[in-house]
Length: 528
Image (tube, rainbow, N blue to C red; front, side, top):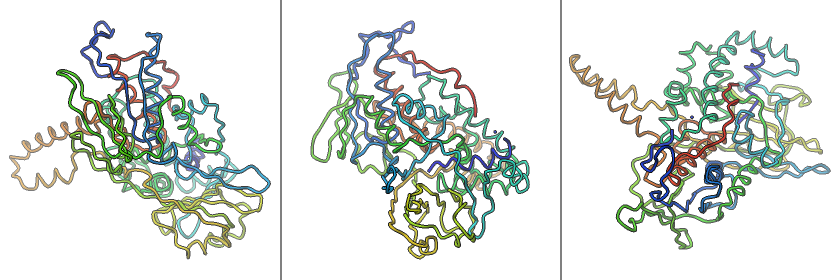
C-alpha cells in the first residue's frame, strides 16, 4: 500500500539512471548485415514490470532514424486471468450512487512517478487526488498525532512533539529522491542493479538498516519511531530495524498522491494494449529451455512450454515475476541468484460501522480516514476508510501481518455487513544491500593475528568488489533478462516500470546493435 498521508506530517512542519558496447557499431551506426535478428520476445508475467517492459520495448523498436517499425513479436504469458499482478481492485456496490472500486494492494502513486503519471495522461485515464484525507497515528492506546484541517495547528503539533526533526528529514529525503529523479532524464541502460545504484548515488542509504541510517543523519529518534516507522510499516510491513534506509525514504515520499478512478490496474492494461503484444492469460509456463545454436556462431534461442503442452520458440525472454515463486523448470544454467524473501500481507475489507470506543473517542463524525500505527501495542498495521456508502456504512481496509481474528473485528466494529480477506506476498524484505556483512568480516578478523588482518582486509575488499559487479545482474543468461533483480533495491509500482523500461532498453540494444535516440524531458532533473 502506498499511502500519501504520512508525507503531510513532515510537510506540515516545513510548509516542503551507456548502453553496453556492441561490436556491430561504426561511427554510431549499426552494421545491419552483422546484426543478430532477434524477432520474438517472451514476457513471463503481466504485472506492472512485465506490462511496462512490453510497452516500452514496443516503443523502442520503432527508432525515429529508421522511419519504420522493426518486425518483431512480443508474447506475454500470464498464469492468472488478469493484467496487473499485485495491482488489483474490486467493485463495491453503493446503493443509489456510482459503484466504487477499492484497491487491494498498490493503492497510490505520486506526480513525480513520471512513468505512471504519463501513462494516465496518454491513455486518457481519470485520476483522483488523495490530499484532502486526514490521518492519525495510533500507538495501541491513544492517538499520538491527529491531523487537523488547520495547517497552523498541524505545524504546532509537529513542532511541539518532534521539534525540527521533520525539517532535517525533509532535506535528506529531497536529496535522495532528487537522485532517483535524475534517472528520468537518462537514456542509459544498466546491466546490473549495482550499476544503477552507483550511477544515481543510492548505495549509501541502501547499505544499512534505516534506524542506523537515520541515526547517522541526526534524525531524532522519536520522529523516526512515530512517523518514519509508521510509513515503513504500512508500505513495506517492516519496522526500522528490518528495512534499509532507501526503503524508509521512499516510504515517506508520497506527496501529491493519486489513484486512477476505477482501478490503477487500468494503467497496465493500457500498456499491454499499446504494446500490441499477444497476451495469453490463464496460461501457466512450466519450462523454459535454452536450445543449442542452429549453427556455429549463432545465438541460442529458447523454448517455452506451457501447462497444456504447447511449445513456442523465442529469441529473448523477460522474466517478470520472482523466480523462486514461479514453479517453472528453468533449463538455462542460471547462475546462483540472491535469495529474496517476500513479506506476506493480509488485507481485510469490512463493510459496516467502526466502533469509535475502540479508539477512545465518542463519535465517528470527525473520524480520521486513515489510522496508521506505531511499533508499540497496536493490533493491526493500518485501518483506512476506502468508501463512504449512502447507507452510512463505510468500507474499511485493514492491513496486518497476520489474519485479523474475529474477536478483534468484534471490538473494532459495532456491526459488519460483509468481510473479505486477501493474503499475498506483496513486496520483498528490503534488507540492507551490504554485499559483505559486517558480522562476516568481524568473524574473519577474530580468528587472525593482528599482522594478518591487513591481508584479510584486502581480500574482503576484493570479494566485496566482485560481489558488487555480479549482484543484481539483469541479463542472467545471454538473452534472458530478470526484471525482479531490481526489487531488493526498492519495490513500488513505479520502480517496476523503471525496471521494465531498463530491460526494454537492454533488449532493444541487443536487437538493433546500438542505442536508438529517445526523447527525454530535461525538466525532470528536478527534485520534489
